[in-house]
Amino acid sequence: MRGVSLTVEPGKILCVLGRNGAGKTSTIEAIEGYRKIAKGSVRVLGMDPARQHRELVKKIGVMLQVGGIYPRMNPRQALELYSGFYDDPVPVDQLIKLAELGSAQKTPYRFLSGGEKQRLALALALIGRPSVLFLDEPTAGVDAAGKQQIRAAVADMARNGVAVLLTTHELNEAERLADNIAVIDEGRIVAEGTPSELRERFGKQTVVFRTAAAIDVASFSQRLGFQLTDLGDNRYRLAEEAPANVVGTITALLAAEGVDLIEMNAGRGSLEEVFLEITSGDA
Image 1 (cartoon, rainbow, N blue to C red):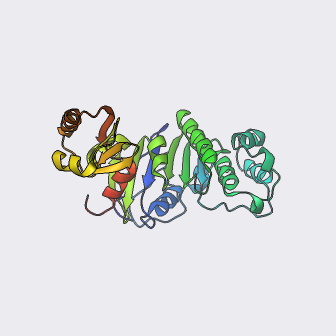
Image 2: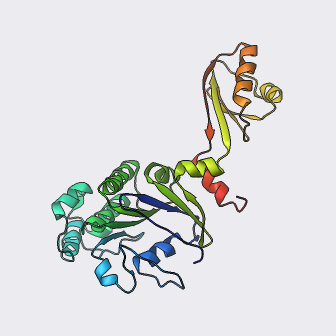
Image 3: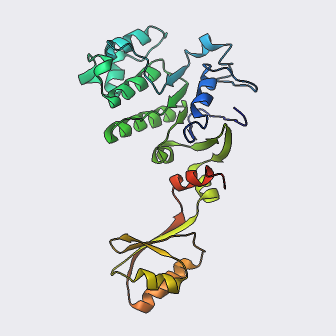
């Protein structure tokens, strides 16, 4: 690992993004104290996670990509077992309710759905009332309702002053949750900032508009000087980065044709587009 420097403040959510093999999980494991680092230093709550691991684990919550739960153990048994490791654990019944595991609390782990396994993993990470929370792909394999629930729980932890560091492949999740984003590529940080800062720095200016009636895309593109993409339902998008004055030009051309403009949105690209731009090697 080279060129990685991360800081997460209490009450903030830092999302680490990167392609498969970029070094996200290795970075998280080093911060948690489960992987030896070649050089540099790591401090979590002022402690070295490798040399002060026994003391630190009582103050952090960790949600790994794989569960690590005995296949025949049910969620209630797992939570009761883990609660014994902490001086002031969150009550098991409270966690079962939080993770909506009531109907599955006595189901052996091997028979749980993917979403139930993820919600149990989150509950186990929260049981010790952590000051720092590490989440590695927290919504992987979870349905839409389960994702919404996990995201709400994570946001609530941050509002209560917990420092959260998470990795995800879901860009909309990062955009919804993260206060700051760090993009890792080939073992180094290649971009860092808030979602809006990254869009402003790397995103391309896009324009999407909708008209009351269909237009001839080829003819309109030729007169506009920029290629339009037909999105259907009388919605169109510039297929390339647009200059600042293009909005006025589009409005004038539509007025000249007698076509009413219903709506127009101009702004930087999505976080997904920004991520692809950053990790393309050209940014």
